[in-house]
Figure 1 (cartoon, rainbow, N blue to C red):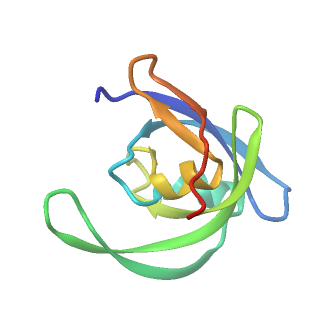
Figure 2: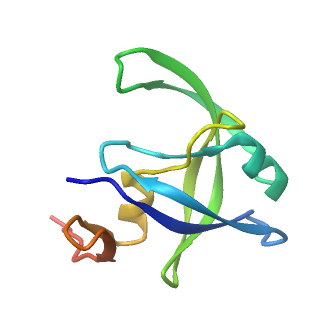
Length: 118
């Protein structure tokens, strides 16, 4: 599958501040990782730290919080990890599934998904 970016709007839980960012769609990533500076500027608060396994096999502890994510009019609260201030934005599987979206790799688009319940 080729990679592509997609716009995502992030809003703090109190809905006081929001911003849009282009994120690399990464279905191999469990969670969405956004530049820490971007999240702090929006007022997204950290609620904890989790140890994550990176693609290169290393492990890293990263802060995370919760925020509203909006893609193509679909909106849901999701977990967001605070990446490096100058790091890439990655849109992970947890957020995509929460918004009931799937990847159409040929069209490089996100499309509504029929979610499996059993």
